[in-house]
Image 1: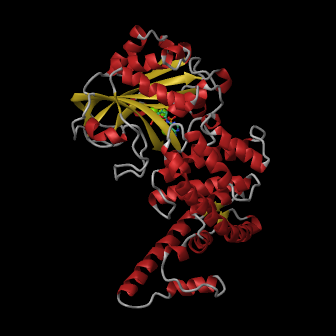
Image 2 (image 1 turned 135 degrees about the vertical axis):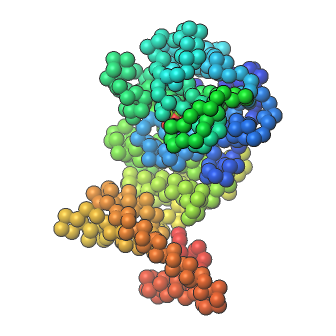
Image 3 (image 1 turned 180 degrees about the vertical axis):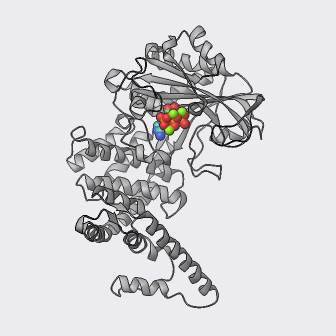
Length: 484
Ligand code: ATP
Ligand code: MG
Ligand code: MG
Ligand code: MG
């Protein structure tokens, strides 16, 4: 089943169950405290915490999400993308636990002819909070799950809250067992920590998280807080990973092999001449390329531009990591003009607005690749020299001052330096790097103060002049002179 089909089925299923269908909001979160929309519930937060009254008792959406905290997982686990689509159904004071569990079971297991996903019920596992008797009994007595496949977990593993006093509640999570060839068995006790064990989690894939927003919580650190009583208005907030379902239903090994991503990987194979499936490290790069190209496409479509901080920096990092992965596969020509149009053609069915906007989107992405290519040319040569010096006499540390110089003068992002250092067995002296950054900030502040008082800021000009052999025209303190 194609990914766009899962998307459509979700909306059809919940529309039939009287849910208001709400379009995805932008990846640029409306909540200023977070950079990106990280979950389907983000646009509904006011209705869930009760600061606003929901306009409808039930709603459903397929929300575009970005999770930067998963960036290092991309290509290494089978199930983490930086961009992904979270399908959610929501109840604001309407149906609660048993209703949510019933809908989820029906959608997961009813046949594809009947509009469901057609998962084999014998392969589904359900995890609940150990004190949530109602969900536990419902899963066994009403749904009819084998008690062996209903796992009770302590609060620190399966409880949702906002990190402060307010609403909180236990979750119920659906997992799909990919089978013994993907890891040890949870029943025989070979994985006592499950879930929570990375390997086991790539066998028992979490596909759907149901949050039962039931209690008012008090003050406390982490998950250590008192439950003060039941909420007057209880809510349901769920999230199903569309890409995870897609990879399981498409019989693939991971989410980067699905129809919305894999053709980009195929193109990257063709360009680089490296075959997917031959070498694990190459595969990781190919998956990173497939994932990051798509994330960049969707971020630029939602108005983000590459930059040196905040959202822009995340976008810059994604594009640069994709370009660098291509280089590590041995392909040094510009690659975005070959890869991005493929990603667009795969996403356009679910997001038709990409078509008309693609001229603008591609110009931004290609421009960033060009800028990075210029940066890399100079920076890599310097890095190699610095790394060679650092490794003399068996050294294992790359000095923070050198990492700072690469960053400050050559626009080399610190995470890139750290990655490249790790690849040659070196560790960046992060403390020294941080204090160099701090000094620079103080200098910049002093410069700005001097500027205000009428002095000409020639500091930057002189520095650039010295570094680039005197060929730099004076452009003043603009971004184009300090960063690429
Ligand atoms: P995991 O434990 O696998 O990291 P999670 O518990 O962080 O997942 P939730 O926050 O519960 O995920 O999000 C709801 C659903 O969204 C998950 O059950 C999963 O199907 C999907 N999901 C979460 N993170 C990602 C991601 N990075 N890429 C793809 N799908 C994701
Ligand atoms: Mg996670
Ligand atoms: Mg989880
Ligand atoms: Mg979860």
